[in-house]
Length: 216
Ligand code: SAH
Image (cartoon, rainbow, N blue to C red; front, top):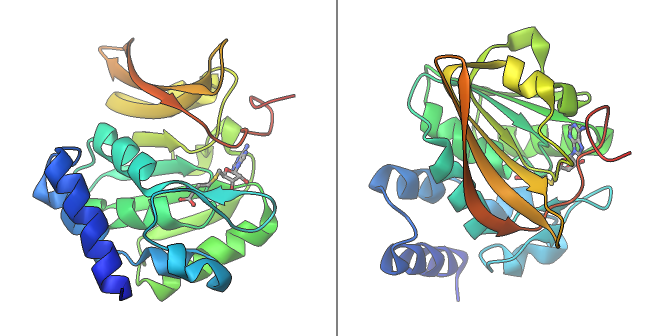
């Protein structure tokens, strides 16, 4: 099967299962080549629906997880979005398409090798509205705050307070938070009139969030 055929199949499955809710979202996934964000030795699995190892013991998330998180984030053109955990840069690339030319994506990554890996992959994919910075994203990224949307792609023990502070009014934060059983509960937190509302999006498994508000 060609790469394009594999990709078409994955997108068709998403559509037929009703998992994908808008054509805009599908369009963003269509516009980004996942093969640009993985290691060459895994290329044949670019559109298999599972995470793949990248550098530094980290992983590129499973495509369906990226889909679910992206949809929950409700991104619109022109928005300023913060991602914690650039990893391969794939999630940032999808966000880049959704915010469009008038929007901006900032991503923070704590593994130096992945800062350059993700930036290279994003350049290859023509995502000029994304900036990847080295740092501890558990403290957010104060330099460009506040944000319309914040997405955390690593498992947090608790919601880091700086992320709430750096979220705009009417902003949305998507974050997998450790639960007492196994893995994480994906939380969607919305800030309305200064107050937070929380919704659970299901159980997932992520690599741990490190840093000040990460695992100790
Ligand atoms: N969004 C990525 C998935 C990356 S996996 C993608 O689309 O490929 C999670 C990433 O979070 C890892 O790369 C890990 O190094 C990074 N990470 C963990 N703790 C972090 C922290 N405190 N600040 C920034 N990045 C962190």
